[in-house]
Amino acid sequence: MTLLILIIVLAIAFDLINGFHDAANSIATVVSTKVLTPFQAVLWAAVFNFVAFWIFDLKVADTVAKTVHSDSINLAVIFSGLVAAIFWNLLTWWYGIPSSSSHTLIGGFAGAAIAHAGSFDVVNQESIFKTFIFIFLAPIIGMLTAYIITVLIIQIAKRSMPSKAERWFKRLQLVSSAAFSIGHGGSDSQKVMGIIAAALIVFNAQQMAINPAHTEPHIKQNTNNVTAIR
Image (tube, rainbow, N blue to C red):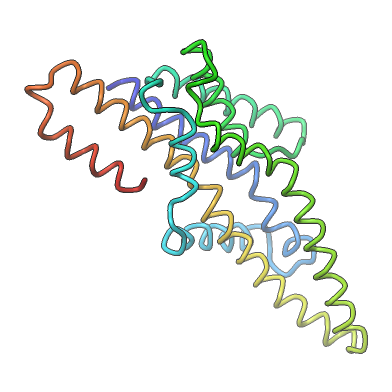
């Protein structure tokens, strides 16, 4: 139970680190153009990150939880993966290196499981490949999409009065920042849900193995509650 609580605390700590690692992405434009103050921008982003929970299905949490086959992990594996991900996130934040917290967490989780089992067979190869390929595809897709949108905006606004265009762009920056925050909340922040769900499932399975006669009724109920997000 102590290790489970420690994992949950570390998972929340990872989410906090992920917040100050990634938060600048969604508020950089509204702060640099002085549409909002830094404090207002952080509140703006936080609200829409939270709202995303009621908009998106928990598919990212499901992917993270299924990175490794559940019969091949234990709480020590999850703990090791979290520690590795936290260390890398702090290191890249300190040196100002933009890196993906999602890939860091999934990589740490998978690496710890491989080290524990001594085999690559323990990882869900389809899930890992899907995650890995978007390391390369995401920047390309973002660049092409931004290019198309920029060309369209230039064509639409080229005959507008500068003062009028500036007012509209400031309003639209709020929309884009909110949309970015919702997207972040619906995707990035689900990672920790997946890790906590995996930890609870493993803990419940271990308790059933230790004392099935005493723990089975409420453990089964807990497992059903946890797997409901999957």
